[in-house]
Image 1 (cartoon, rainbow, N blue to C red):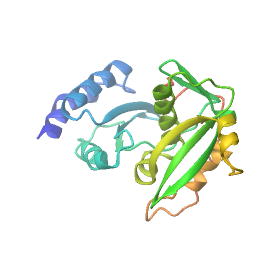
Image 2 (cartoon, one colour; image 1 turned 135 degrees about the vertical axis):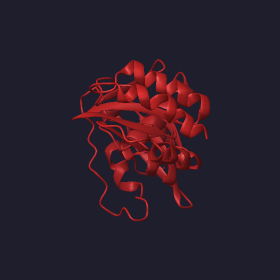
Image 3 (tube, rainbow, N blue to C red; image 1 turned 120 degrees about the horizontal axis):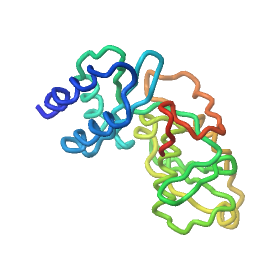
Length: 214
């Protein structure tokens, strides 16, 4: 199978590493993954005692099974923890990607129930939305980072972005909420009924592996 072939090629190089996996090794593995499963992502981070590698599905529910299979079939490798789907993560005051920037401390949201899921509208302040596609992609990443990939795939049907002033003009008094409250609005999967984690917007542009990429 393609998954077995992936691990047969990747695992020896990972086992040979003394310490956390470096960016070059992770990039090689990511390239190999894209050849057999371009719908998935691979990212790594330094953790105490080694590395954590996460197979993501870009928040797309139908690809969750494959991401979990990739992680489940990984051979044992000392110092390397492998799992599927990204957890919530702290967000900085401002995120940027593809030439667009979104200040999160002033961003609000409105969530619209759609059957058993939600459409999420991020409302920006003092940001000129020149490239809507880039802003929307960034907004999707922000929401996924805030609530985690599993909840995103299960309970978010769409993410849009809009200028807050335009929203206030046409909202007819409908309330918007601070971005951090989104983690309390989106449900948890069955069997995970604990209260939503408090996700604070923090002034930290670094991921656990020393980079910030959204």
